[in-house]
Length: 485
Image (cartoon, rainbow, N blue to C red; front, side):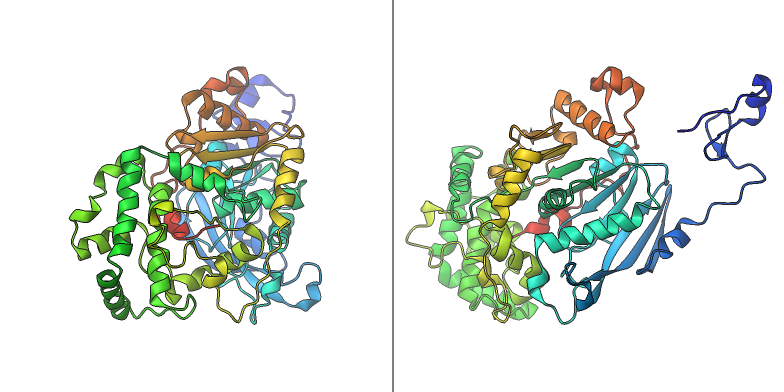
């Protein structure tokens, strides 16, 4: 901490006080000045590039920050680093080394334009974002798929944190949404001493892969009966009109040069999209949007086709739609698990039911499910969670099987946004819960204002809202379109 040197008060007011720890002068308006005899601090880009294995892809300007997209050399196998390396993309949204740092991951590819997660705004900090291993271009060549697992990915994060902690020495938090929230949770399980807090959004917890009654109960109760019936009828009508709908689908595929070698047939892809429709609606629409869903039997074939496209996306199970998400489906079929809902309203119409992740991964990639991976994570969270926060949406199907806290958890919380979908955020919580969650995050990061310590109801993000940095990109929400795991 900075301790002001004693001196003549009038002189201190004129020229500022000099800190004993750093030699930085602080003017009366709070801004930092540098004594004439102090050497300028090394530029942040030079400090980042001085890290062994770090290289610059590009720097993009943004007011109030420095933003870098970088490559970091990682071992393919953290248990045996001699088995080769690969380049993993990360980004750094740099504010100040005196601020806390948020380690953010989507669990998928890396967004390469400046953006700010909600916890980053809450603590007004730096943000490190990581591309998950095996998402292109962060994929070893050739790819040994057996090295794509939650422990190896957590070890990627641990190495990045260890390298950057030397620069960003204040408190660290990890965060992410959906698979990113799962990723933040797994990282905490394997490296519990790295982070000072975890904020996981809409992170599913599929403990027992072949027991999915929670999802079935969700779809029986979510929203109003009228809304559920409208959505179910779109699915039923699509399967009843399978012939003409598939003619439209085939023309659509031919126009866009889509193929279906991975899933096997256009018929399988067609049904997979239709069966995703209801899930997709609740994932990224609000209950009020039910009013926009038409009565299925009144639609022409083209109108029905377009309605399904608007929610589920006909490209989702083409080879071209699946390829970017092969690493996800591989993990869903080997560790994460995948929901298998019944949808009784489609009985007698569905030929394939919910298809497993194995159908969405090329057959030359071997897969074997590890049933104890998620049970281990669930047990660890219940018994060991410390400074962990889970934020869910009450109308989000992925929140049907959430993480739960047990007797062993400490200073940890679960919040649910009323009516929230897969984009649930702390900002959408009721006022009292929103303030409590915000205060906890600031306390974990070591930046809780004195006023908040006295009354947490006054807690609010420390950074001003930025329409570009803080906007929830619809593409980020739709990243999980059709993904069931």
